[in-house]
Length: 302
Image 1 (cartoon, one colour):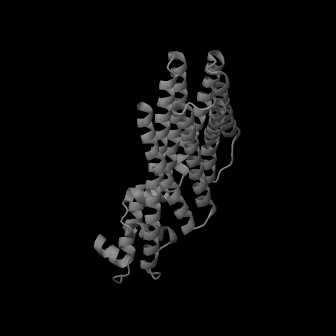
Image 2 (cartoon, one colour):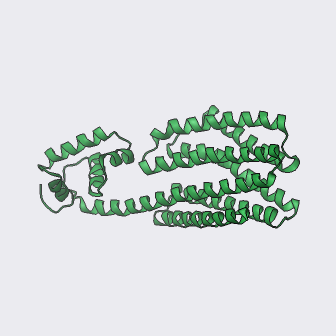
Image 3 (cartoon, rainbow, N blue to C red):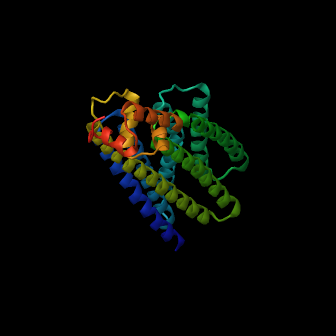
């Protein structure tokens, strides 16, 4: 009974994940560039991993299928999650245009290799306590380096929604993968492998559901901002004596964003935004926000 409940949750996760894939595709088609294409490929990659996990669980646990299919799909699943540990820091490197350092690369490779090795050993021979505990310690050490590096690099990511999404995906992944490992350990040591597999499947479904939810929120926000920016660009008169940075802030004001949101999107402090807004009042000879919005929208002269 519990397996069918978890399968029901899994169906919701699949629906949310493929909704995120569809929105990612639409987001890329609206403006075809490498960054948006890479994002679409990444989410599609996650959707394939989710389907693999479902096939494995359904075949092995509900149908009591053959060992060959279970091991094959399990290996593919472990390889996928291992590559995810490399893809996360690589994505951050791409977003902030930085190169790999030896520490980042070694930590990512160690985390990938150890995670896949632990999974392969578990599938083929079961849990080997001395080796697995030592490898697990090495894995958590490498995972900690990756997490600290991404959190420290977050301030360099321009755009508040992008920064929040990267941190959320990182946090979910860092929590999910150790939980899966811990559930395997619980199942082997407690003699209840069926409970362990069911809990892992629940973790997996919730992980993908929240990942997909974060992606959907991100795309809804980004696509609405695209529309608002387009409107703002058309509405702000070219004759206004504003610098490029001031125009960026002016567009954000027209969109209705707060000072904090503008600061996050542009990678500046809220005080800097306030200083620019104060300059608007002087440059454009306005005395209220209503007058300022009227000038920025071209509805009144300054």
